[in-house]
Image 1 (cartoon, one colour):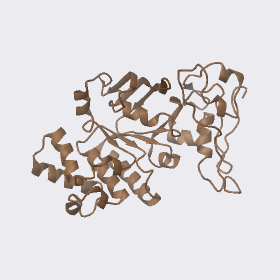
Image 2 (image 1 turned 120 degrees about the vertical axis):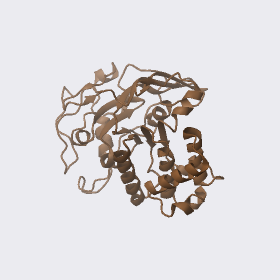
Image 3 (image 1 turned 135 degrees about the vertical axis):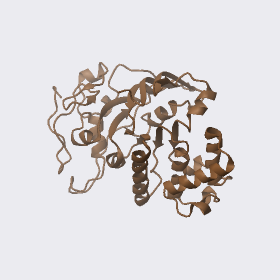
Image 4 (image 1 turned 180 degrees about the horizontal axis):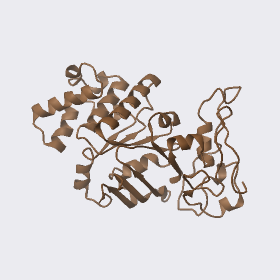
Length: 338
């Protein structure tokens, strides 16, 4: 079956005063219809850059190569005019902080109507009716009144619902949600995740979720792609990733999730060091300097993404094997010589 979106060898470099920075290094993944795919990793791993590169939202100093196909049509290389017709209509975005995404001097109702005018050529009455339907769909109370309000008059959770309503206005085939719950409290987070899950099931819209929060991933995702230093290092169905993580970095991310049952002192484990800033595509494992299982081969050649000991793809010369002990949070024996 042809995927809804296919990304192949996506590479993004930024020209800077200090030299080129390799933000995304030959990333490849697919998104199926009605699927919720989570792109996971620490800040600086290239998740948001990947998402913005899909529709040409990166600044002028970015060099983008590779292939991005939506329903078989190549997006990279399209003119700005043709890409602008894709954004909002076929691929819509929900960004991390709606207060910086919404126009502070326009009512939220007008901002949604602008999307409908631009992509659907709707008349004023039709656009207003559609905006009301969208506010009701995303659970905004008193939609008639809310349409007349400005962003600063709404709570954080309400503003995020407005952003989701705006993203769904033209019934896109793919919704890109970039850290959509980061600035919200846990109760509102749960509401927004339930909303995204329900809307995806009801409308058939696929979701590409950008996040560092594995709790969010466990709650909503069907499949997970793990990024590190601009590279995809593991890909799996969500249940398999949590039960049998294969890359030491993925294991580290899972260990960093608070789990009082795992440690008597209730403390957190951390991955030492920082995500490296890459200047070029180094032929080594970029996680080697932070990995507790590093060996000579890791610093000598680059591991490729290939089926690991539990079946799903992983880019590691010595991947983890065995199931995770729910009490300790530790995985079983390693394969290879590590």
